[in-house]
Amino acid sequence: MRISLDPSLPPARYAQELYRRAGRLRRKLPQLAARERVLRAELGRLEEFGEQLRRRPDIAPYLVGELISLGALSPPSQKRPQKPRPREVVIDGFKVAIGRSAQENDALVRQANPRDLWLHAKGVPGAHVIVRSGGRPVPPQVLKRAAELAAWHSQARGEGWVEVSYTEVRYLRKPKGAPPGAVVLTREQVVVVSGKEGL
Image (cartoon, rainbow, N blue to C red; front, top):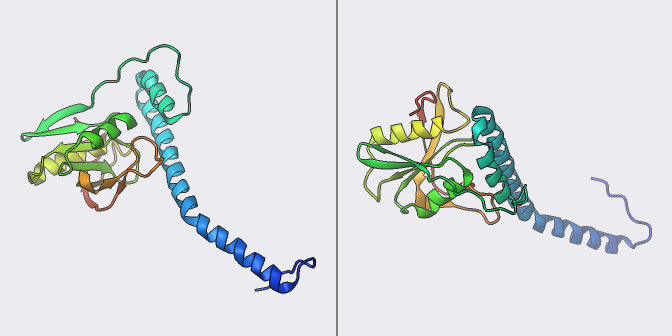
């Protein structure tokens, strides 16, 4: 490797300056990687908004509230309408909650028992699904049906086979500064289900 020298500095001093500059850049790498993750999550969120608007134009007023919470829009001076509660269904005696927005996804995770089961379609924007197990073992048929709901309420809807990540809520972390709905899994299992099985 060749390094061109700065003629105004002695070679030893120039080498020290290059070493210091490399050290500063190396120390910034973790911050840049974290910022990249946050920006990718924001991009995914905005893509999810576009997908939701394409599928259901009637939710445009609700998505305005989401964009305001992300800081992409300024809030109107008048009072915003109250957001609807997450959708809940019962599968074989287990309550299953489905988030319909980033805010609801955040609220679901915050309010969940650490032993509840969390599901999300892998690698695509979509709903968080919480099986309120309270630590009880979740039967395979309940897990499968909840995974189908997670696939259905994602951009993978209609796909033949969809990978769905699942873990207990206690294995979720929210990165500092991450947009609503973004989480990091510290443990993960994957189940493959049909993306064509909705409610």
